[in-house]
Image 1 (cartoon, rainbow, N blue to C red):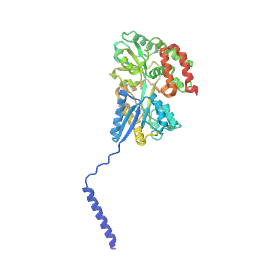
Image 2: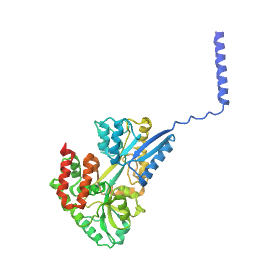
Image 3: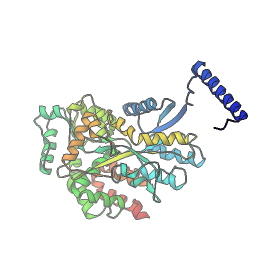
Image 4: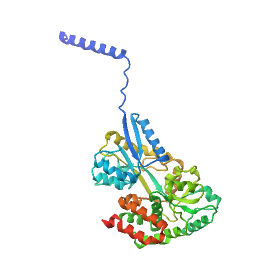
Length: 418
């Protein structure tokens, strides 16, 4: 056997010595602190205030638990105000927030066309969401926003205790609906059978769309949105003349009242019915006392969602996109479990995780096989949206102006003007 060269033997001894000394040093040195992650502060703009903001804050708190190095600064900006101020800021290559949430998909696409929005096509998976929910934020074959939770506008809400006290029941036919309104009108202390919520005009538009869908059918709603059918079409006019205008003229609807104030008045019994979205479940003292019914024969209801987008001018793009992806998935589950009155658009979310009153709503919508349809004014958007609201408020106080209202909506619709 050949002997090991002297120089290699010496090198081996040196290496062994170094390894031993290193091991002793590592074993005896005091524990080293784990580096603290750099804190990231994300600015978030959303449409929610009051209790609705509290429910969204629970989502932010959960994300902070998952990502302790993230802090949030949340601001409330309504969609109509955001559409006025944000374009100027983005044009100046600045942004008031890293994450912005709005229900107006058309507005997001406008900002995308100007090059201000981050393309999310590779960030989220379209197949993970309710079919069609991304249509309004898709342009040029790309996705520009992620969906958050969905609200539904399923029908007329009532207090079960009120119906029981006065021997009332949900109508199954149009004649039964008219009879119900007449019965309620005769109850002492009731000002009108139906309270008309008002803000900028959207609660009135919700009622109108429900009549269009229930009487004219889901396809009529879609055709009016696209402009394939005009508002002064005979089919549309008949919905208004034979079904919507008569109860307005008969005093079954109240005059428009600020919509949150209307909730209070309706709940205390000044009114018996209120057409409103599912978020009303989180605005009342006892949601177990709530019931709702769509107009008899309805085959669909409006559903809408808030969309999440990231401006290109964010100083925290990576953190913002990471939060957006979580918000559009697990964040929906958290939000759906609160009293916000929303359901996830993320198909992997379990209905069993919903807040209990919303489980009942979800089940009834499923049992009635109601198709989920896009919100007309949110989808068409632009100047026509506010025109739609204003014209319907006019109709509520001056129903004899129906012809003028329908002609105006036809003339100003983007499909007609374009």
